[in-house]
Amino acid sequence: MPPRHDIRAAEPRDLNAIVQLIGELAEFEHLTHLLEVTPTKLAPHLFGDDPVAECLVGEVHGEVVGFALYYTNFSTFLAKPGLYLEDLYVRPAHRRSGLGKALLIQLAQLACERGYGRFDWTVLHWNEDAIRFYEKLGAEVMPDWRICRLTGDALERYADGDRPSMWSPSAWLGL
Image (cartoon, rainbow, N blue to C red):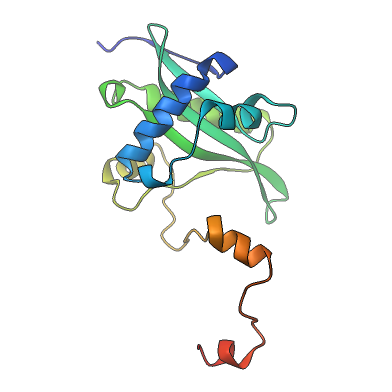
């Protein structure tokens, strides 16, 4: 029988463990080249004067072995806030123990308690285990939606006005 897990709201003392788990997640997703997180960078966003995200941690025998980092988004169609799960990660040794499912259930309960209209997250197209897991839980994997993102230099250039005009002839001609 797998060891019993506990789930609780993250606390500042968990920052090192959360950052370690984020690093493991980046390695799993082959995205370590994008990794910039440190406890110091993450702290104000979770525990500062104006936090923009929240986090649950999953513990086994007092050790943090999983986390779920989330924040509020908004649905214009529902005219309600929603809960957006940015990342959920459980160490491989603790997968299939019920911890991942328990984290998702806790988040769903939180969304309902807060009167949110939905609970969203993304999954990488190649992560078949996660897709099957989410579908078994009743989640709909939405194949028609694609993520759009501006980040880093592209975000800075766009914000500075360095972007093609949708009204220019080159845009009309696809140049």
